[in-house]
Length: 485
Ligand code: ADP
Image (tube, rainbow, N blue to C red; front, side, top):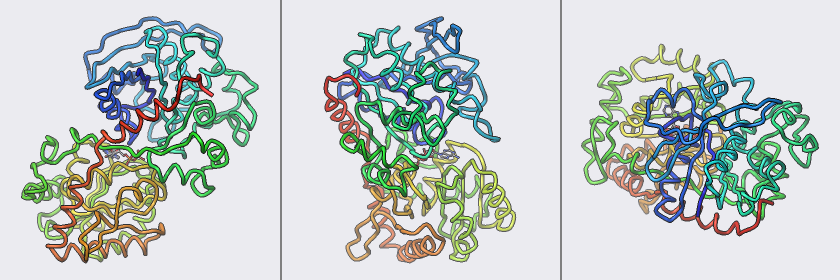
């Protein structure tokens, strides 16, 4: 089984969110099951800066692009269990950000990622890597399915290639002006509502949903939610029409990266049998946020998150004063929305003894927050899967989450009588229910034996990739031998 993975971010090379974690981990777990995976991703400036040992496997590959011939090259890195093939085209990818700057998205993202998708197909051919499955992720890769169906349909090389499109977040669809369609070499007739038009715009994600053999999302619940107007982001009708080929497979955790007993990024190792190291992680965490050591007496609530409406940060801002009133210390690591940053920065000045804030993308600090906090808050308005609750569980940090998407699929409300469950949930995205869930958590925190039982349950949860990788392999096999629909 040969699989070509198309993902615009992949750990350990470049990451803005969970997509990178999945694209770097799933191939590694597919490989022992017998799949040969090559991951195609852009050669960003951030990747170049890592000075990896890359082998140039293709040079000067010509591609007709906007009336001229563009040339790109492909550089390969042997990763753990898969090969990463970087599409090098400096005019598009040699930039500071992956998708934009703090001021906003790059205005030519439509060109950048259509080129990426088109170049991937060209590279796959030039490498002679005849894929049984083309597995594309999110809108950045979605035009590959359109090229396959409308530009390369007669190409015998791809005759037996089936395709899977995975939606990691339906809210980011890649919307552009109509004129881009012709510019990127796709037929103009696709600009109609049954193809790629979406309320007067060109919608890249529709190409993935419409022209793939099957569509998946990253949790079973999210695959159902997106078929409703509330979560469908305007595409619920289209998704309902594809329900026969739409499934949800829960993301996994790569425990070789996320395990407190082996994690080199945290101040002290610990495991289910010995939590002494977790206390040291807590003091280390307070140090890193320059909070007084006395704060260690309080339960610490941590967050590692994009500062975005999706993640419910506005609810946190509204509830913050009451969260302090409950006696918690709070640490937040995140980047994103300027208004949220400003609010939190002002709150930090107001509560220097209780509130630590770092506006950055910082992998080491993220690990320390998972390890050193007592409670981990995820009040998302929607959550396709969510990885952070699964990381928190492994580090014995109790998730308090809004019951939606993958959060609903992975977190079970703690039942003190049965000592069953691994966290706390609330339904309405409002400060009141969030605070009530935190109070329930604190009620158990105040009874150390029960809290120990809860932490034990959390750390015992197993979301390893092996199971999900098997589900993907089954899905690949079920795609059958037909060419893309
Ligand atoms: P999403 O992809 O929607 O942002 P996920 O929960 O699927 O949410 O994945 C988020 C990933 O990004 C996790 O690995 C989390 O640790 C990481 N992350 C988010 N913000 C930061 C940050 N500021 N610094 C370091 N890691 C971060």
